[in-house]
Structures are given as C-alpha cells and as structure tokens.
Length: 177
Image (cartoon, rainbow, N blue to C red; front, side, top):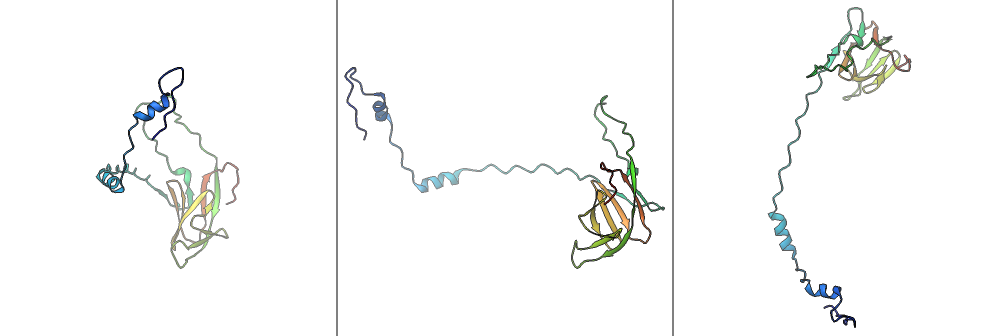
C-alpha cells in the first residue's frame, strides 16, 4: 500500500503521484506452466526457401597449340548483349601488351594423399594453390598441370618440350614468377 501524503494547504486534493497509484491495477502473477503453454501454442512461420543458385560460369579450357604456345589472349571474351543499346558503353578495347614466358615442367612428384602432389616448374617446386605468373595452380596430376585464372583453365600436358606462355603484361612489368 502506498502512503498518502497529506494534502497541501493550498488545495484539498492529493498530489498527482498518489492519485495515479490508487488507479493502478495489481500486476498479474504468471506461472511458468502458463508461459510454456503460450510459447508452445505459437506457430513459427516456415523458413523461407533459399534463392536459386546461379549457374556457374562455364570453364574455358586452353591447351597448347602444335608449337607449344598457350595464348591467353586468344580466348575471345563474349559480351553479354544489352536489352537496349548503350551509346556510352566502351566496345573497343585496345590490345594489351603481351609477355611471353618459357614454362618447362621438369618433374611431377605424386604425394601419398589428395592435394599433396607437387610439380617442379622452371626449377622451382609448386603445389596446388601456389601462383605462377599470376595464374593459380589448381590441380597437379601425373599427366597434366592446370593453371587457372577466373573461368580460364590452362591445361599443360607433362612433356619434355617446354611451353611458351603468352599472357598480358603485369602492371609492374615483372616477369618473375
């Protein structure tokens, strides 16, 4: 119970705080079993479906030609047609300066487990995931070494003859792997 404050001499009414306390209802007492029943009665909405996955970009596989040249610039990039022609779209791209690198696979070392294969290329040892001239070694097998850049896969067969790798010149101009 709240104590009442004696009315002030100026007025015969109680202060507003005391008047408000007298109009408040008592708080209801809740039991855990009542709350559990309320929670169980609630129906959760179904989980929304995941958005459909976009199809993966098609992988373009490039193999060396008869002269042992792998030319990354020979892959033609197909432009997506616009719904409406865009007069501000840049359609001409000047050819990039190219660099040629000699690439010789000296040996392939087959590991005991998956992903443990290594390749000796130009006298240096590489494993899957390492970078060589800006290309990532994605897979090393007994017959091939795969270099990947985006959706471009350069597949090098293991042979005695070295390859010529023709790539766009790096920004720094460095040709060192």
